[in-house]
Image (cartoon, rainbow, N blue to C red; front, top):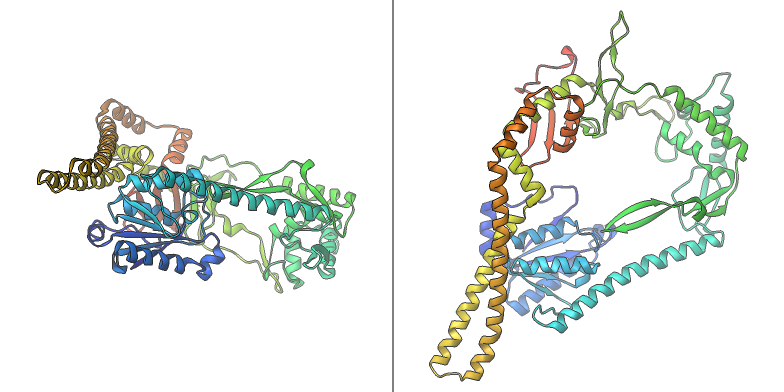
Length: 566
């Protein structure tokens, strides 16, 4: 048996090649899908193995399918109401390519915990010409009572999930009303007493906090202190950081801006809501916050004076916005450390002090981090900056070269945004439906031959053939629907490929010197992201087979640091 553990945001299992797919079509008869809902379950393997083993036992006992004819696709730590589960999509993709005739799951709540999603997935499986089988219940698509029970079970699973979340929220609110805190992230200066669910004073950290406040408001040893100076001084004095051995300027800022030190902790400032399997944070209005009294370290006047002082640092260091237009703003990552790349300070002419070159700079280089004990600045990323004009010009030329191949690109874009791979799935589904039609026509012919030979009477013939006729009519209707949808896709492709007037206008537009705003709009539309290395640029476009890498041998390979830098 082949087992795939498909992970999110990781190419743990690339798609099979055409040769591998062809081999699978001949050998694989069933796909098993198993899911657990939390990362802890996934990490320890809770229930995953048993789901696969019980599904395999069902295949062997009921359908005679052996282990070598099965692919098990395992979902690790994904929510049942998330429609974008990577392993689920891989399992569905397999059956839509014509792999397997059975899709096996332990229980419907492993497939989905949302009724609409359950119906959508089930329809997709049946449309691919595949049967779905659950270990712990039977589902017959031709039995109305079976389908009703299946749908009721999906509604119950959705209700149970919502009920658990509602009960959990109510319990936390009740705890807060009684002056307790239902578990929070660590707050510097306090310890969380798990036995009483309250915040208690951490005397050592309280003294450090009060020292930071005094430094900001009154300075240290006659010199003014800002957030960076405070982080550096704490590191030099060897004071442990909240998490790890480094003090970040951002950590100092977050601590000093927190109003909890005035003696009130507010619970319910934000709310976590689940939507389509994803958790989103929603900020709630202040009148819905719940207040819990905690030990106070400063009064309100001191806090307001502290915030005024911190805001003055921000105004002083804000500076003017960059005058140069950055084509790739918001699209660039650093290839060295993975941090975001932002607009940096320009180099200036030594005589006129006018900006000479603008640069892309890794944000990891500018983070203010200091090592505890030595106070030594820690640079999160080391390496050169990238000339903005050189990078933008190169990326635009690469993008233009792709767009000049207008027919190919437009067809790719059309497929990605309109088709979405649907036509390939329809072709596979058509094949499965045609095979099902052929099998039922053969069975009908066999019954007619038995009647012609006098081995069965007309009543027995009707009992056998009438359901076959209804099934054949349904399959023929489904086949006509698929053919019609495929014809629509084909007509749209022909229209996109033959609209020469549109293509000519687009080509003329690209050849003109379009302004920076239009270039930026095109870049945002067509570029997924760009990765900058010291000697190479990787451009990832929003259509397939579209990674453009420049390095040695590219048009940009000679623009090294000696020529102004990339």
